[in-house]
Length: 102
Image 1 (spheres, one colour):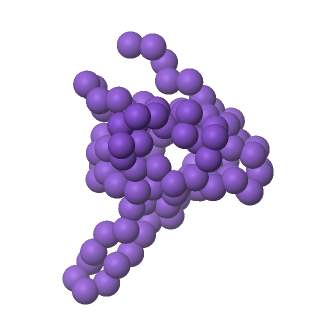
Image 2: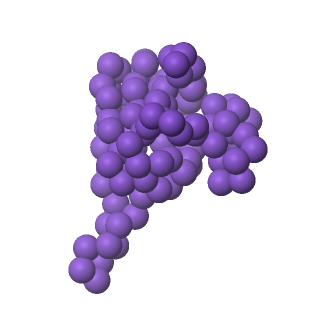
């Protein structure tokens, strides 16, 4: 399997992506803020917010809509779980292409 190509975000850019459970986010450069998909805890909805620095890896246990944002230029790679490809909800465009043209 080829290594995932880095996806570049410019300062202030924010992208939303639907990622399957088991996806690994790898920060290649800069700092990336990751907001997990909303979850229920009792009767409250909450979201986890994490900041990842260059070289850090985040394993997404639950899948869902994730927000990726950068305060300064950053790049990251998404490594899907084995046997899965990262695609948009309609399955027609890979995540990398979507992020570059969104």
